[in-house]
Length: 209
Image (cartoon, rainbow, N blue to C red; front, top):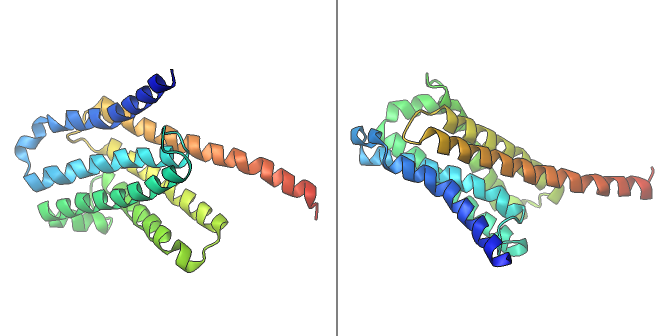
């Protein structure tokens, strides 16, 4: 039964990420776009899928990737997320520099642009914090608070950015993927908050002053 459960979990996760990519791959909009633009678009879809993986990894919900292995994979996926965002933004820059300049300066008329830019900077900030964490001597509590705050920004802005875009992704599969991203993030954050409360009560009881 355990093997079946593990297989179902991985199959569901693969479907959640690959089905939207499959629909995007057969979109008729590709006929009017350059290869660079298409690659940039798919990099954005990959990035959204990686955002789904991150809370699942840190929460230990993926079979075989709990504890240390889950945390290490979380770091590697974080690096892959940065790379996907760079390909996404770089490709869009090559395809249309004026549009990207407007987006980066928050002057774009499209509603989805500012959310994408904010998510991008939040992802870069998280990667920078992670890279400098040990060298800077950042306290674990400070790191967790900063990381969780940035994660909220990444999840919210990435989901809003994706939902507002009317592009190659099919509407229902995109909405399902975005909903899973939000649910996974909420699940992990709620679990961490609930674990902190008993500890806080224990500290108060042992040290009333």
